[in-house]
Length: 249
Image 1 (cartoon, rainbow, N blue to C red):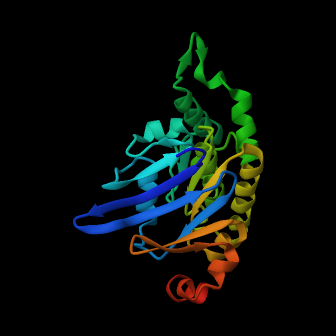
Image 2 (image 1 turned 180 degrees about the horizontal axis):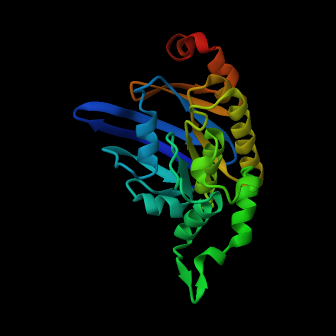
């Protein structure tokens, strides 16, 4: 696909005859925050699962940085440069923040031991820099399970960033957060964009969050893209107001 950064063409996936993803086509430019919105059951999580290789599409293509990655395994997708955080917190609660990031970093590097040097000493500066970038430097040696919900979400972002992605998928990064915590994770996302040269694809229910960070917004309904546009275009779109925003406007 030439110089295309990320593009989906005609992606389809059905479960027991029900189309969860219906001929979805969209593209993302390098360096932008692209968001996808839609009600529960619209197909957002299925789309993220297709992109990251957790499930395989029935039809369609996925291109990343000029390469066809359709149907590749999750490991291959990560090594291609795409990483993801999940809606439900997914870390090792009895390990420290540092150890969680270290495990992710060494897993990406396919290292557990280098000669006779313990894995824990490898890439220490890199790991600490990443922990600082996500705003958890003071909590580096705290157990992940003892962090606030907001800080656990920051850790999720850090775990994803440990694989040095060019495209970062964030699945409901503010779910379950207080207003103050949401402000913190948004600052983390903006810092990541600035310091990591990372493009972001965001799935989120909070419209205030979507409108505050997005360059382009895609709208899903019943598995299909019904419209897309800038924040102002989506905010003022009558169909979006009727189906998706409602009283959240």
